[in-house]
Length: 154
Image 1 (cartoon, rainbow, N blue to C red):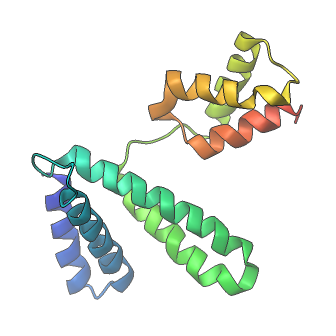
Image 2 (image 1 turned 30 degrees about the vertical axis):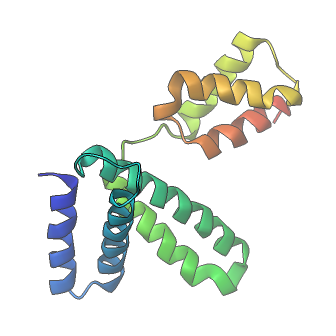
């Protein structure tokens, strides 16, 4: 079953269950897919690769927004929770990324390999090296944070 077929089935199930949050996020993703399909540079069919790309982009935007709402404290708590649930729900269609512990060990190895320990100005170089060699397995924001912590001696 393709991702698009799964989304359609999930939408029907969400409507029957009167699950408005799930229904809304599925509709939004389907809208994002339709927008991507209508772009002038798009050619071909809507396949799983396009769906994953659209979902990954949407998840990235929602994760960033969630962090911004979380920074608002109590005023943004409800929206931050809503966005966190959307990210978690959509993640089942995305390849899994390495966790913080695995990322830390890769960062430490890269810092040793590049011999840049303690050089905070080398953060871009280390991040670039890691994303080039392990990019599909890594969360870029997590890598960036861990690299900066590692180079700062933290």
